[in-house]
Amino acid sequence: MLDRFSNKLRERGLKGTFADLFARLRSGLRSEEAWIVLLKDLGQVNPVKRPTGIVFEDIGREHLPLLSELNREREAEEVDQRFADYVDAGFHGFIALRDGKAVGYYWWVDAEGAAEFPDLRDFGLGIELGPGEAYGSDFYILEAHRKGRLAGEMLARIEGGLADRGYSELWGYVVAANRPARWLYESRGYERLWTHTRRKRFFVSRVENSPDPRTYKGGSDVDR
Amino acid sequence: MSTAETIEKFLIEELAADEGSGALDHDEDLLAAELIDSLGIQELVVFLERSYGIKVQDDDLVADNFRSVNAIVQFVEGKRG
Image 1 (cartoon, chains in turn green, cyan):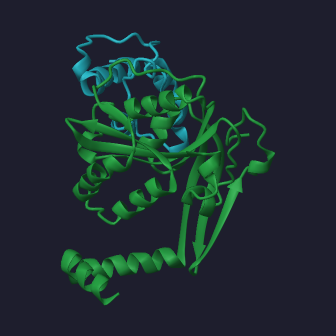
Image 2 (cartoon, rainbow over the protein chains, first blue to last red):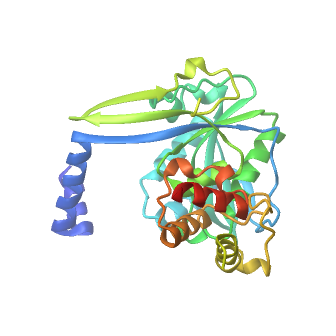
Image 3 (cartoon, each protein chain N blue to C red):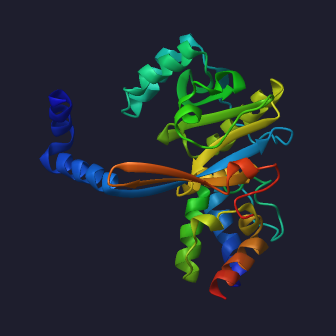
């Protein structure tokens, strides 16, 4: 704890450290974030018109050093362990490589891994995977590579890769306020199903899904 | 310059600069043409807000509002309405 505080003090300075502490305290007292649960029909996958030439592979243990380099570049070394745990747990992923270097990744599971996958186990998103369905999350592209339609190309390759494996639907979610991500999914035909709201009041968290996922019968969106 | 022409000019000069296109059909499907990527939508929204004094909400970011130049014009006019 003391180590973490002194590291933070060194990285952010006294003013930055107290600003971060205040922000955490404030968000514990009162915060609200909306996520939109999405569904993509993998029978409708359009390949991109102008591929950028990225190499796209299934994540295996041999990719962990490359992912570790990526995490270092974005100053998130702590994520390395999570990725190693994901590989150990048998979760699936795609890695995008440019000139032999990892520039992005995406993790996914099907019904077999759903019970253990953190999002589906802990978040209360209201998603229950059935046969032929996959759930994807943790989609990341290094900031320096975000221009030039790489995100759209990666998503097209992910959808195509899952469709080729016989999956018919891909579930996910997007933070409602994340406009670039929201547009990315919108432009690739993801359906908006329900809104998952996470509220925190005096350090007590509450989640709510609206409309109720149990009423979902297919073909609707958040406006119904 | 009409609203449609102004938006067309922005799309060509700012979002499709590397396409080498000199003109854009106002009904052309911008999504199918992959002209507006996830960062491009941010630039377009800022441009529309500044140029036309409108406020674009998160929920306005649906394909139907940005599918073509004419769709964007209709969206802007609806906001200004």
